Length: 339
Image 1 (cartoon, helix red, strand yellow):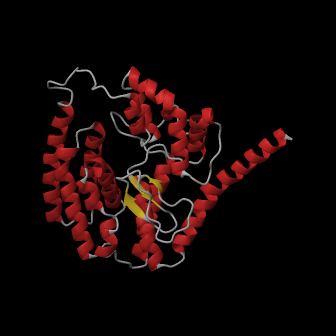
Image 2 (cartoon, helix red, strand yellow):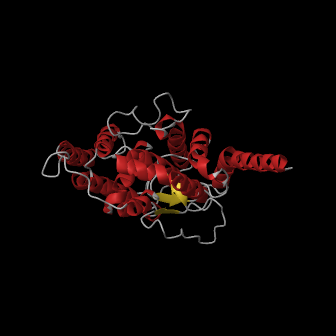
Image 3 (cartoon, helix red, strand yellow):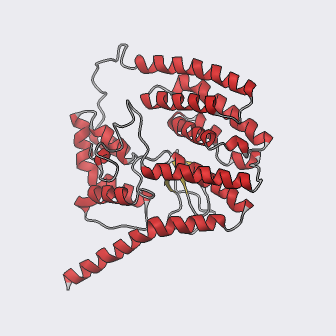
């Protein structure tokens, strides 16, 4: 609840405004979606066609193949479809994108057993209907697959509470095991876990300083301040003021704004691949919109050299630099108080 009521996102917060299970995107997420749409427009204006090798870097198929990354990959395909990615894709890249889209719709029956999945599927249906770049034959096929997937997903969501396990107590897990699992969650997921039961709420409450300290260092390793008992408050304050960095709900993606590194974060303990990048923000968690914007920015950089450097500089100056300056001010205040 605390996470959803951070000042700056409205009185009702991030959760609760999108209906059952859905998440209303914050102004920061909308900014990334607009950045992705602008990148597509610039690529289209420059006459650049996205090749099959370029599209393969997004690894949409890899995301769809795993249950834990399926919904995130579906959101990325939805964002690309809305941004009119097919208008700048080559024939082979467009073929691969449509195949991924069809695979995504077909897999919703197996992986889409939540309200958020149902909401994403409905948005995909609307995007398919409104797309002007899809061939009419392909659109009819996708429409039929989407309709079938919708009924299967709706049945899965409605029957989720039925069956022999309904009303049964949660399986017992030691607090140490729960604490280890909670370490890898985003702030919004931590808030959801605290609402499950008293036992889970107790584990979250005890480990909150450590959880938010690790989130702080994971999302923005360049800025590291705050007392142990203020990590949650510090994180949420920065999430409200600097949502470009301290986002509260990120997908299983990590990447880099400077070298355009992207990968699915299926092994949290494994360090990100560097490949010569010395950026301090390399390998931080990304939202789906961030991943799509960075994917398109790399293609734009190769087509129009220097464009991505400007993007990174803007990102740095607007988001990271104020944080570093505030961090220096905090350090100087501490020095004055000591003297």
